[in-house]
Length: 186
Image (cartoon, rainbow, N blue to C red; front, side):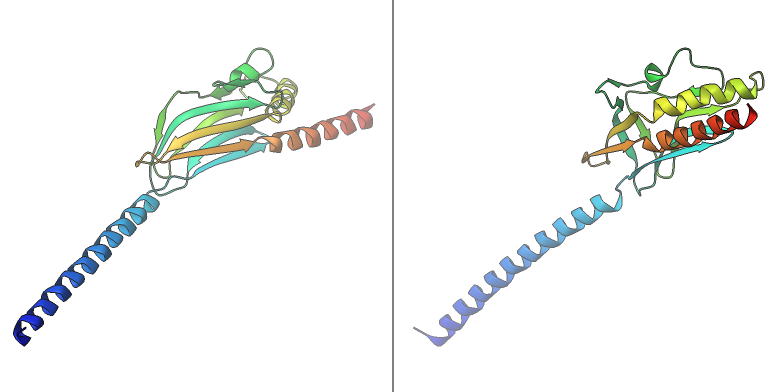
């Protein structure tokens, strides 16, 4: 065989190998870029609980970098009951000043928040009545958990569960203070 033909064959074979390696690294780079793009628009659900003297709130906040597409929002009790509406767990009639939200699906943008529950003292309710219902509400909320299923814009499912034990702790503390006040006043 002629040396030129051998060199041409080696060059052609090397070009095919270099092309195959180039295609491999191009596909690997595209895959890494796709993974990076998915992670760079990931929603993160943060459920904040607040129980100050004038207001009790549950807020769901999207602290991620992409929209949160909520597919399911459920309230679960310690005894296994579940409901889409937190009002079904509240004792008796829901008083004025208490607002709740329930929905089947919702899109929450980056940095946006939804008030799932807010209870403020209305002007027409006495301090004593407000505090009485607020204690009942705190006790009731302390037995619940919030379960959220949502997706990012790529359809990747995420599940999040938040227990509301915080409210149970506040309830116990407030009830103890009220009991001590009654003993002191008597």
